[in-house]
Length: 502
Image 1 (cartoon, one colour):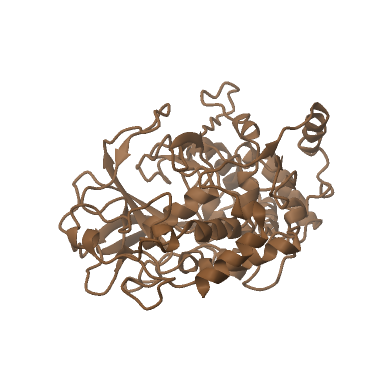
Image 2: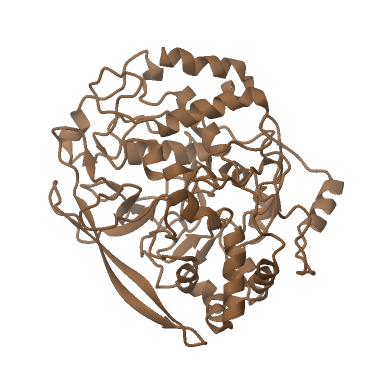
């Protein structure tokens, strides 16, 4: 019955039903008049005494009302036509459902693992928001995991400056701390923190939490001596479709690999293999911009996080390596002639992609408060917008009315930046070096406590509040970070108030 129910809305929505795996967005070229008008709209403000026009609508017409509950990130795009809302709801059902290992009587939900990090997408992206770090040594690392790799490998797409690495030979590309019954999990992630004091110019002392990562209770023998560990906490999900719709040329316009303008900022574009054919495309998603599309990101999570096969990753054993023989031969959820012979069929991947593409960005709060406006001015003055680009106009798109031609305010340039040794994971990924990270969008950041129940930030949740997150910035962001350290308390509080309003 579930399979029938999943098919019905696809037939009712031809645009979604006709989407093929790896298909790019259908873009309508801009006219010269539109380009001139857009340039004026995107010009930086000169008057910080009042909000800019439309600034409250971070996601353009797709912006949603800022609910005062934990569901603030779980609304569909504010401009979604009625006949597409059922697809969002069905995508939500797939995103929130719990998968089970095979064999199982629930044939529409089996195939989990055999090794995995979570039983469902929502287990990591809690309420479509951020994950969190374990609160103690006995808490499992749900919503957080370790990426694994060793030097070597190849560049399958022949991408310039690709920093070749390969999966750890025994444990694969992702350390998985859960397993199906009768099979051992790979082991346990261990985090040890030390406190690092930072003294601000006014004498305030802020203690930063510096993490060290290791693994314990390894079930399949030792890891390679040269293994590189990189932690990841699940990021918030809002606005992904709008980020996907930013014109590639507008992102590449900010690239300055050789810092030709001498401002200390040298953002680089990530190019990665995309879709089923592995053609190079601009990386937009993931902490190191390792995925080009929402579909690629979703399929990668099904494979790595839950061990579920899709059209983009057809092996039913997920991240299990040849050294984990029992995992490779375990019963899978793939059935010939059923669900396209996959554990997550094309239609289900379409629905999850549609859901992730359309999680609405909440509107701004307190946008005209004097303290917030002052914080915005300071944010500009100290150079934060050099990486956190405030606004874009998305492409005109066929078949995607929610994302088409919207003025959005994500505060990201979508590029890779060297963030210094303090934040370095020392693990290359594609074009990203071991100290480079993609600038994360800032929209919704002030609702983290409300949605996720904590204020942990950065790629591994080490920052316990926004000020700590800023103070961890180094490398290309060192000058802006030092400017925050030197601010008087009123201006420091103002910039934090501005961030809380996003």
